[in-house]
Image (cartoon, rainbow, N blue to C red; front, side, top):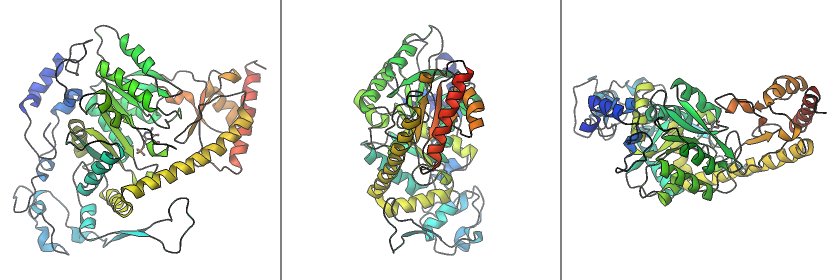
Length: 493
Ligand SMILES: Cc1ncc(COP(=O)(O)O)c(C=O)c1O
């Protein structure tokens, strides 16, 4: 893989032919089957064979060399300086390198967005607004680097360093994508060879099942308990791994306010999981879109890894702006070892060149306006709103479902994961498809969150947008009636 930032040539050990040859000799984590790594650690060992041989294209690979004074005749020779509506910023070279459209043809002179009053505060007379203009607008409207707009990437590195207490030592970086979904699907591609095993906590966020199916990945289920991913279950799976069978190198987990289980892993639980991962050389894939939707922030795997390992690089983390700013912005970022984020960037370069510059430009401007503390304050206000909704929602759930269902009271996120075992219901799919639908209420049957489509007594309910005044009461009343109908049909009562 060529270096996406420096455009440096392939290091000898990752020359395409050598990489392919080496990959066939190992199980992909640099060890023969069944052994735990003994050689010095490199996150590169986690890359799939394809990621090791795929390079950034010839144009994007040169973009990092666009320095003042460089005039390149490699590509489209239209000098934007001639047409530009304002004096050109720093890099004359860049205007002749890539086939960028001439910005004078773009019909936008500025973007202004009016902001609501801070969440939870009554509307003030003065309405704040953010405006993107001049050079920032040029950058947002133009083709831009695959990892993200430079200023936004710099902001995100500073932010992650602050939020996760992690020294910016150059070993890790961030990559932007069209939501964390986009980045996760790209990350699976750079971490797994087709057919590879991957450990996934179950029940699992249903959105990861299709990209893993496309890779023909063997999804190994590790059941959660009331604190999320269970280190005991993980140890059980890994210690009884069949001799000679290719070992899993990655575990997917959504540790806070998990979708769908609603569980959150405590600091202690995360340390236990990290210990097991260390023992078996497993990379943690931390999908954390609900991290800031917690009443109290719990240190991330990304932060805690250095308490267990001598060095960073054993966690790839996914953050999303969807639950905090807008899902329609389609913006998220991956944070982790630069070898892995760069490999994701290579996929981005080939798939969609880069994430929407307008979405990035808007987010950058908002972050500049708020500052890190302002953003975190917004996160706290969002968490408070969901906590209040959760309390009201749960109170109604207790009124109608006590004795019929149990659930872990969530400290984060948007979901209540009902277990209908007390009602004697083993398969919620039938209940939702028939009795619940007939009564006029819907939830997601637990089966949707298991790749094997196994029977589940669970139902996922979301309290994020439902009308708390009327619909919640009505919904739970109907669900309780549907459960009773099902019990009659099953001959339980
Ligand atoms: C656990 C989890 N991961 C990822 C996503 C996707 O988030 P994004 O909108 O950033 O793609 C979701 C969306 O609901 C989710 O629940």
